Image (cartoon, rainbow, N blue to C red; front, side, top):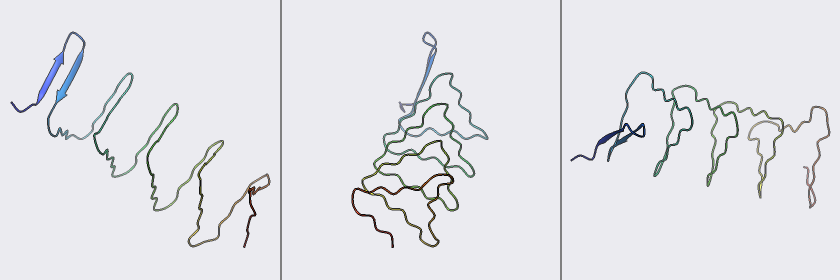
Length: 120
């Protein structure tokens, strides 16, 4: 036997699909609706690609955890929030071509350091 299985559990109202290799869906549009949760797991990698946009929306929180994270944006990145806090052992902010602007629209910009600060 190939190991491919389709199991319809009428008593518990479940369906299980098993393949020892690859399962491929080819269609114009692919829609998944779940009235409760969606869980997916991969033993190695998960790759998401879109020819245009990817929209992620959460009514609650979005949590990310990783060893490292890289973001490569070709044009512009804009972030907006009521409050933003960043923690790191070391922080480097670099402008490679233009001036850098640190601005507060209505309040004072404060620089606090446990050691001496250098501005040059």
